[in-house]
Image 1 (cartoon, helix red, strand yellow):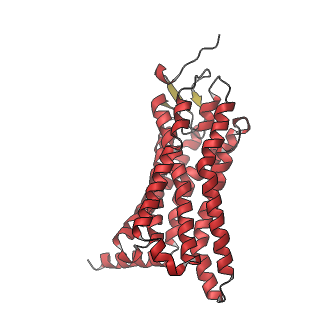
Image 2 (tube, rainbow, N blue to C red):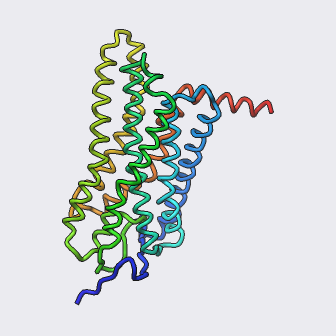
Image 3 (cartoon, rainbow, N blue to C red):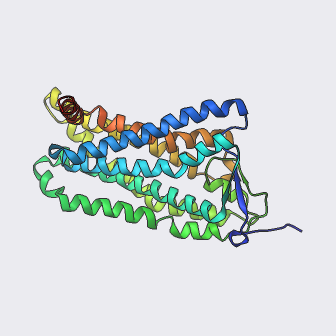
Length: 312
């Protein structure tokens, strides 16, 4: 007879972390501590600089500020637990905490999908309809778009998470991961997971597919408009405002879709954890560099504040 347990039993899950090699834990702790600190500090600098400089109070920088705040929250869901595991070894996490982490993580991922689409729309209006930009992207519209991103992001995985939290489990409560990963949780269940897998595709597609298609359509129009610009300097300037966003979109969409939009039977743990590190730790750290520190307006604002401090 197979023994089952569920969320109400009060059992803990064990997170094994990234590696079971003791000699690798200290170097990895140092690496991920640096990554996490750079993520938080880099995104905080971007938020602070944008908020303190009126010349950066434009729709583009409003969405970059929103993305930076999102990246701080996104990385903070998983990275502190990873650092703890690298110090202490395999770590216990309660079922309620695990389900909460899963829900918040998926919600923030959905929010980032929609936020990247809103940023693509902002670039579309700026390049394809420049004369109407300040009307179509006025402050009230930007705030409404940001609120929609967060509301949609946190509503989309709600039903999915409730269903997963009520699944009966029959395998040892051990997750070979550093956070409560969806596929790992499903692998512990003793029921037929076809319904959950279909639901994963459907729920994921509700946000990810429209967001991807809208982003794709926006950039089809953007590239078409840029190619019709007669001046080479104008084309270069227009492309430079889009390449950063395309880089982040490609990195984020690629890793997340590979991880979560496939049947659980095809999940390969040795590939899943490096991919998870890429989009939970590396991407949020790189976003400030890709989006803002290469931007001349942000660098000018940073130099202005740095020079002020020298003379204080």
